[in-house]
Image (tube, rainbow over all chains, first blue to last red; front, side, top):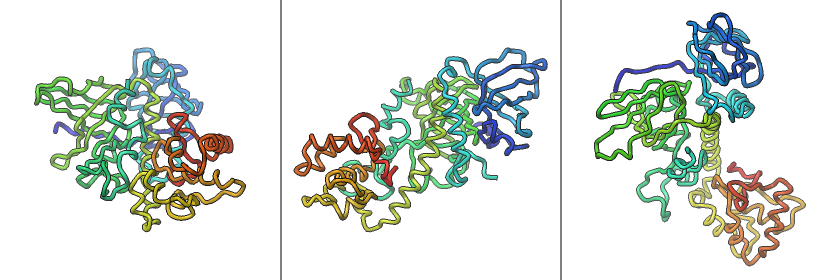
Amino acid sequence: MSEQHTSPHRARVNGAFLHQYHGKPVCLLGTIIRADGGGTSFQVKASDGNQINVRLRSPISEPLSGLVEVYGIGQGKNLVVAESFTSFPDTLGNNFEMNTYNEAVKLLHSVEGSHNPWIPTS
Amino acid sequence: MWGSADASFGGGGGGGFLTSQGYDSPQTGDKQSKGRRSQNIMPATCKQLLDCTEETFKVEGMEAHVVTLVGLVRAVETSTTKISMHIEDQTGTIECVNYVGTDGDTSSEPTMLAEGTYGRVVGALRSMKNQKYVIIFKSAPVTDLNEVTCHILEVIQTRMKLKKLKESDAQKPAIGGTDNSFSNSMLAGGLGPTGTGDAGGGNAGGAGNIAGFTANQNLVHRIICSAREESGMHKDQIIAAVKNKVNQKELMEILDFLSNEGHVFSTVDDDHFKSTDSQYM
């Protein structure tokens, strides 16, 4: 097999769960509210409606809109320092049911660890 | 487009894994037992596969030869002999490979997925030199992001459901024999000509008589409770089970009554019913 790719086990969060993962890897899905600061940060509306700031390690030049999924480290209750992110085209995001997703995120945080392969155990 | 893929694998979305085989013990006299090869597709996370220490991947004791992952495609490498994709689903990253060109059949080649997009892979877990990878049977881009939500829920639901099945099987060793067969045969055994169904299959469904129901309403309710399949029980099965006791017109009234009172609900179509009181939820 070729080189091993590894990635941290990230917790899928909404705005409300973010503060539980201070300093830990998280994955946050939301819609872009606005980009600012010369491409080094943007703001997203998380699945539960909370406004979350995303700070990027390196500035981006392309304009962002619509749905994004941010992978990074949680900082406090409304900041994620992003390592990377994925921007979804409108064709994928237009009929995305944000409320359903938010309920799924809430559910996966309510299931105890041994039956829940999504949440990091530590 | 993924819908058609589901159909070809014989599993309707998430639940298909339960319909193909009884739970984790050898079956006798069952048409589906030949070969012992499980037909189920288990929704999984990368971490579950990477953490798997045994030869076959198991969830709550149930073997899964075919798994499905939904995640970000991180790196795609193609060579003359194989296609390799790294799938990351936030719990970890696993390599998914497909060896191409061995039989000169290009139709079996997997759909190439673009890096940085979400994709779904159906395949089998293998390991080489302690490194886990997935042989791709099928890969497809995720064209509707709700599929990601769905996969998240399926993984949790599968695990909890299997745990519940395991627990209920452990609690009822006496009826273990009939439990492996499908609800049809359970009914045939449990609800004999007497029709009262007080023993056997009736109780296996986990629902006793409900006060305020007529005898026939209780009978139908118990029958629906005993359905173990994901999609519940088809109307025709219910009709067959209550034959000679309840005529069709009355059965329809009873089904309407049970639906209106919230005891049963229709599932995949208007003719399949499942009980809200069933222990096999």
